Structure formats: C-alpha cells, structure tokens
Amino acid sequence: MNSLVILASSRSGGNTARLSQEIAKRLQADFVDLLGLSISYFDYQHRNIADDFIPLMERIVTADFVVFATPVYWYSMSAQLKTFFDRFTDLLTVKKELGRKLRGLPISVIATGTDAELPSDFETQFELIADYLGLVYREPLYCCCADGFNLQQHQQAIQGYLDRISN
Ligand SMILES: Cc1cc2nc3c(=O)[nH]c(=O)nc-3n(C[C@H](O)[C@H](O)[C@H](O)COP(=O)(O)O)c2cc1C
Figure 1 (spheres, rainbow, N blue to C red):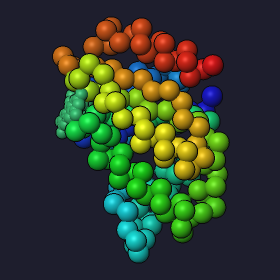
Figure 2: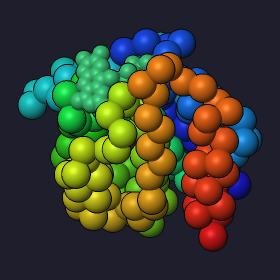
Figure 3: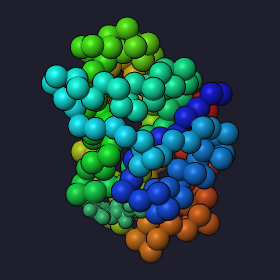
Figure 4: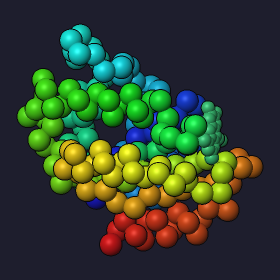
C-alpha cells in the first residue's frame, strides 16, 4: 500500500511524532512533518498558492491511504492540522481538478493527548471534512500519553488499529 503519514504537531520529537513514526514504520509509509513545510493560513486572494500546500496535495492524491497525526490541543486538532485543512478550500476554488482527485481516498486520524479518552466530539470534525470532500474516513487511534509516549504501553492499541485499517 502506498501510504502517507502526515505529522501536524507543534514539535517534531514529541508524543505524536513518536506515535506517527511508529505507524509510518509499520505501514511502510512515507512520512511528512508539516513543521518542515511552509503552509500558511487560507487566503481569500490565494496569494499563498506557491507555498508548500499544493505540492503536498499532489503527493496526497497519489496515495492509497493517508494518516493525519495530531495532538489534542484544547479538545481539538492542532493548529497546524487546522491550517492545513483550511487550505483544502483552495481545492474547491482555484485547484478544483486536484480536489476532485481526492474522492474516495481513505484517511484516518491518529492522536495523542493526556486525557484518558478523546473528547466526545473530536472525531466529528474529521468525519464532516471527509464527508464533504468525498474522502473515506477510517477509524482513529488514540494514545493517552499522560506520562509521555511509551511504545510498550501502546503496542496492543497500535496493533489493533493496524488490523482494523487493513480490513
Ligand atoms: C496547547 C496544549 C493543549 C492541550 N490540550 C489538551 C486537551 O485538550 N486534551 C488532552 O487530552 N491533552 C491536551 N494537551 C496535552 C497534549 O495533547 C499531549 O501532551 C500530547 O501528547 C502532546 O503531543 P505533542 O508532543 O505532539 O505535542 C495539550 C497540550 C498542549 C501543549
């Protein structure tokens, strides 16, 4: 499978990075850290059209499966991921052709936080985005990292996630 894991955290070596690198390794997926790219806020005038958003989208539409990795920040996705999703609006306006290529693409979200569970409505935003864009939303993986990311502690959940998405 031609998979892609996209890390959207405020740090490249933190809990979400460690979880997403493990998932990328197990899926033999390519790995992209949004912190290493220049993707600016949505601009109604599209003055940012030459930043790194479109090249990343061109890579995404060639994938068979895309995993978005985010920490839970204030009960929601990270600002990096929200900024990235805001830019999907470019695909409904000036880059429609590219946007159409997203249809049917399976996506999933993996997340870390310190609470025992994901906030109750955390998944809704991704389900709605996927629905709007014609993406296929697959089940998420959440790892509580109250004491930092401990791979051993999450092995079973990671394996369960990999089993679910491969079916
Ligand atoms: C700004 C900020 C907001 C946070 N908000 C939440 C939250 O609402 N729920 C939660 O479970 N954890 C929250 N946390 C904890 C992080 O989600 C948790 O430490 C996560 O594993 C950090 O991932 P990172 O190392 O990729 O940043 C927050 C942390 C920060 C820095």
